[in-house]
Length: 309
Image (tube, rainbow, N blue to C red; front, side, top):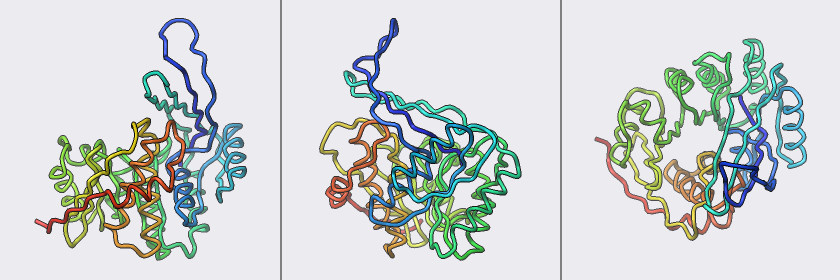
């Protein structure tokens, strides 16, 4: 709903005086749903990205997707699509992800997005709703998405935050992926451990908010919970220095969607998701994960099962 054109710049050392000379690493289409679609294709699946596009930046977004070969459906809006900046400092080996607020949508534009989604998802088994909502959209917008997905016989995978998250959970989704910050907003307390994540997931399941709950716990890994119990998935040791966490969550969701669509059980899908998220940490800025690295890390994801309760 609020995609970006991602500008990735690189500087040797970020100085607070004078000019910082930067090298342009890449200019790519970005945003949660677009990144997920790209990741699905990278893992051998098929995906269509449905997104908004407005103004000159929106036209550039469409051109970038066309040039990359990403199958997409653009919904035109009046406001300008946003640009985001990822600044990688080579001396410190650290990335800064700077994202402005998105455009403001009119109610009719939101309805056009829902209609475009419904036309596009015919025959699809899974739909991913990812990213924040732009201004002007009601907090229950993803709830409306959930209803349309259900009416079309598909399953919704949700990855969002804030009021948009709570608005969707009131309707119920198939799978919810939360990072630690989102889990803390739902739980009203700090989430630092697998035990904390299990408690959040248990609440989501018992409240009927999600059939499958996945909560990530930073470098520890993730907890995947279903009606059968809770499974701890320990992140694999990285074969190199972590460079950026930008896009790690989107990569995880892409892996989950790809493997669920292929018939895997949720735990197996999330195990690959943890491996893909780890592989994403090894690439600077928003560059996509290396598929071979992700596949090599998958056997290193340790899995521990706990019954419900």
